[in-house]
Amino acid sequence: MKYLLIFIASYAVTFFALGAIIDSRLQVLAEDLRHHPHAPTQAQYFEDVRVHAQHSKIEYSAVLGTLLASVLSLLAWGLS
Image (cartoon, rainbow, N blue to C red; front, side, top):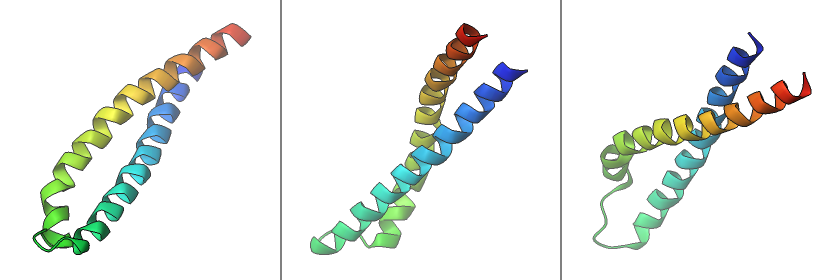
């Protein structure tokens, strides 16, 4: 049961942490668009990259969540 909780917590933590990082990076990129004369508007930019950002968030969360859960599970197994 403790390993299941480790895996769920690892995926949740990485999903929310990576979500915050990716969303803040997208905000910075969107703010920088206003300095370029031929760039799309912020709304158009977010519309174009929203789906790709969501897929990236899920993929990176799966990889890093698995890695974090594996390390924490090995640590829990070693300490018990």
